[in-house]
Image (tube, rainbow, N blue to C red; front, side, top):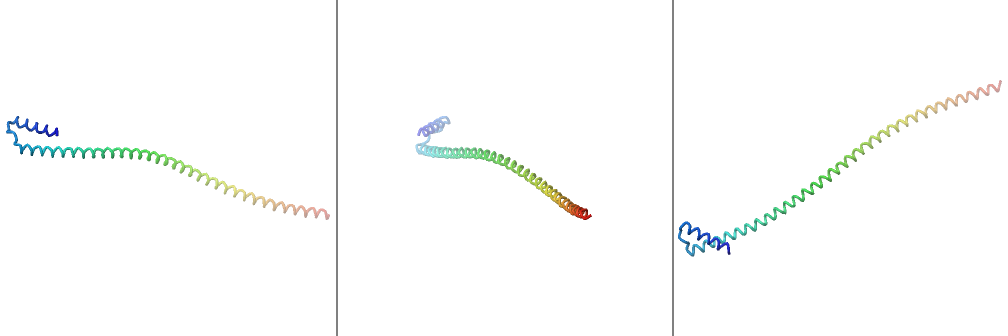
Length: 143
């Protein structure tokens, strides 16, 4: 209501400055109605503006929250990625070690097979020499 009085005072002052005849009561009522409508629109616009500002503030806070969450998740991802790289490297090393051990095992098995073959050959020569010795002893005893 105070705004209406101010508007009326401003209008009357404006009319007196420009030396225009004061408005008629119907014109004044019309102007008051326009002023009331303008004030109502302004109040509605201010209310809408407050609602929109609040929504904007909430969205800004939501964005900040999601940015923080994203940063945390990126950190966890990089940490996990680093652990996966370490795990992959350890697995690769274990794989290489296993292959090396397998090659050594095969080489030792081959050496064992060679020694068994040499042993069998030496044992065969020993038995042959033993048999020859027994024959020689038997021949000497018969003389």
